[in-house]
Length: 157
Image (cartoon, rainbow, N blue to C red):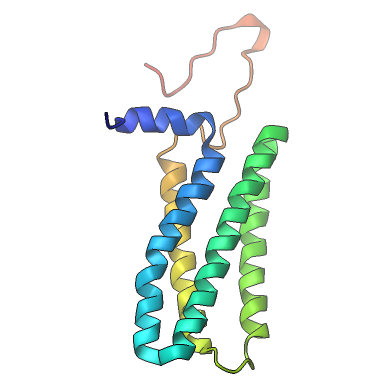
């Protein structure tokens, strides 16, 4: 039986971070196949190597960020938005540092590496935004109602 969109959203809202990490990495893998194939077709072996390196970097850092978010969610959920923002900034710095370090390496096409990194970064960021906007409870803090009052969630009728 295929889960309904509502069932999927409710399941995601219970523990969304690991699902974001695994499905995001799978999405990046699927997106990487045509990017690497086009780089190989246009730039040959060095293009293939550069795009594959970029794909591995983007997927690895995306998965690492998801695991980090899952750890933070278990220990201190109130810090999730801050950790997510810092994680995005660190990823951008890591991409820039790697691209700079690879500038003079032979047998790696720098243009393919840069373009593949940018395309896959955009793809994973789009996936993250879509995931966050379609997952009720993502980054929500569940606090008790004050002084015994019954609080209603905005998502319930």
